Image (cartoon, rainbow, N blue to C red; front, side, top):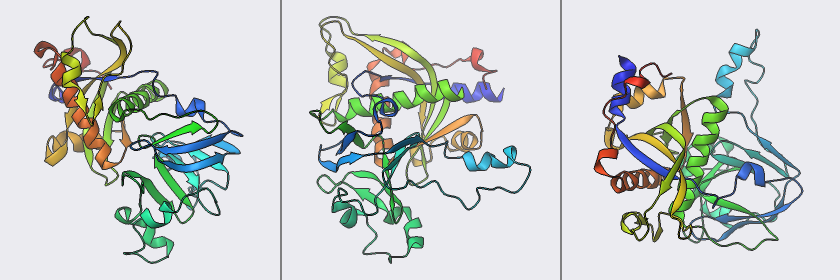
Amino acid sequence: MGHEVEVETLSKISLLVSTELVYNLRESLKPQKNYNFYCQSCGDIIVKERKFLRVLPLPSENWSALVEEWCCHPNPFARSTLHPQHDDCFLGETFLLLNSRNESCVPEYLKCSSETERHTSQNDSTLKSKENTRVICERCKTTLGETVSSDTVKYYVTEVIIWPSEESFSTIPRSQFIQSVVAQCLVELSSAKSTFRFTIKGDNGRIYILIWLLNSETLLVESSGSSSSHSVFTLFGDNFMPSCGPSGMWNAVKVLYQPCVKNRNKDLADAWENDFGVHPLKFPSETCLELLLMLSLSTASLPPSLQRMNSFQHFKQYK
């Protein structure tokens, strides 16, 4: 009965458009190639002409909590940290880690935009305050990531675009980019970990959205001459729906969701946070609010009969 109540609470339906507009970072980022890092919001170059000798995937963020299940002796990794060396790039689920020490191409803004100088000392221990370690774009002041240590910077995949330096670059509309990146995360994790429930957390540790992935192969078709969805989906100065020619067809993922802002659905959020079957995804808090708005607009664009699901008996045994 607990699962039945839980699913019925998650009654809002939304579609995230998943297009080929955004390349797969894990497949595209290769060693021995030069890349530029761009701010996704304004297109300013963050890191120029960076070549990596190693591009390595990171384990999930809670991997250390499972070590006791693997080892019959004390945790051998208790004092170890996974920090990239010079010319390394480590890929997490929603972020990447770079080594910034002695890097000539790291721009000056990393020194002035990490808000540590006015409030903290040079000691590494002061970098633990998340509020004081945010890395922001010098041009548009968007949060790009945070300083993990004195020589390691974390960039969120929703805030930067990594592009081969020899190829021409053009900015991607914000809402299209966020939709595609988040949809890609949901699909990849559901396939790799067989998990379909997610909490969307901000960099402040708060849960903003609960998401249940229903279908990763939804086809969204717009009838010829219809412009209602486009008018509904216009936000952040760009078109929510990508242009795809006269056919009006998009790949999308179908999700159930509930907002958790202002203590909404707090009991359910607490239950999901303590459920090992739920996978957390962390993004900048501002991006979490953007995503929530996109989900709400997507729901509003659907016919009223398709906006909610009030009975999910067939999900009662779903783990």
